[in-house]
Amino acid sequence: MDILDLADAHKPLVAECLEDWSPEVKEAGPRRARWIERFLAKGLRVKLAVHDSGAIGGMVQFLPIEHWPVQGRDLHFVPCIWVHGHRQGRGNFQGRGMGSALLEAAEADARRAGAKGMAAWGVWLPFWMKASWFKKHGYRKADRDGLAVLVWKPFTEEAEAPRWLKLRKKPPESVPGKVTVTSFVGGWCTAGNLTAERARRAAAEFGDQVAYQEIDTSDRAAVVEWGHGDALFVDAKTVRTGPPPSHEKIRTLVARRVRRLSR
Image (cartoon, rainbow, N blue to C red; front, side):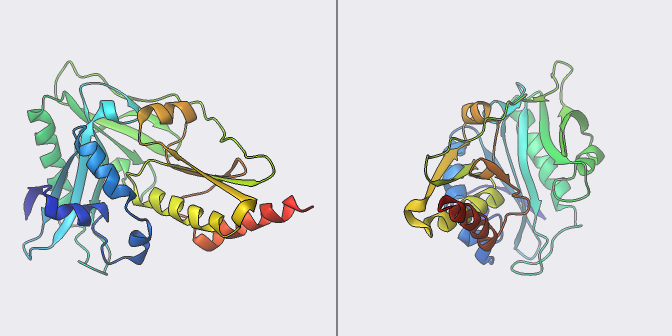
């Protein structure tokens, strides 16, 4: 296995989270590609794990924590570490040590950049981005917010533990006389991008009866202002987005609200 730094030739594949075979990922549009270009200028690093066969099977992205909506300093943060686990496309590379090798390489880069530690987020339930996986690699819990666990590994004695930002959730504004569909989307996550794209298309099907608005939460200030990262609202009512709702589900929710307009 080899670990490579991101090159221009890899960017389209990384923008599609190694799932270039997936119609759903392509449906999400170019948002993630734009996010990558924007945050490369802010210190984003991406490393890729290459199997002996030559196939890219995993990736990790990390950046200075000051550019992520987490309270912390002099640390690097891992928004995502992913090893391809589908039978489709390049195949299943999980369980071969790729994730561990990627995390180790990211930590080494962060140390060379002068970071005093590495932080990441995970969930305490046993699925994607498991907090328990990070703990096996020497990370400890710094904070928790519902299912989301903030973990970190200090590199120096001077390192300070990060904390979740204490966010006050602000509901989106409604457009009088119309059903209002609001997408909060940061661009970094394919799932969030897919939800926003489906919501945009569903809203457009109802013409002037529906107002679609999109709030860019790629900036930390926008997350602090609204209290949301990736989220979807129909008339200020939260729509569950994990996993991303289908276009049909979003359309059905919007249609119900549209029917109420004529009552």
